[in-house]
Image: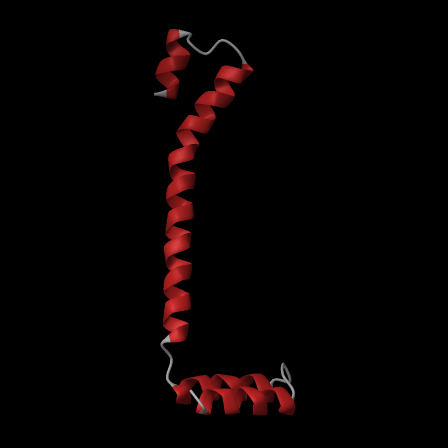
Length: 83
C-alpha cells in the first residue's frame, strides 16, 4: 500500500510519510501489546496456582541464594502454611 501511494505521488511531505508509517505500524504494535498483556496475565495466573509445596521450595531457593534472610523466609513459610 505504501509503495502504491508513493507511486501515485499522494505522499507530499514528511508529515504524510509519518502518518503512513504510523498507520502501517500501529496494528502490529497493538497486537504485540495485546499478546504481551495476555502472556503476562497467564504467568501471573500460573504463579498463583502453585501448590504450597512448590511455593515453599521456591522460597527455600531464595533463602539459599541469599536473596531473602531467615526471618523473611520464616514469615513467608508461616503465611503459606496457614493458607
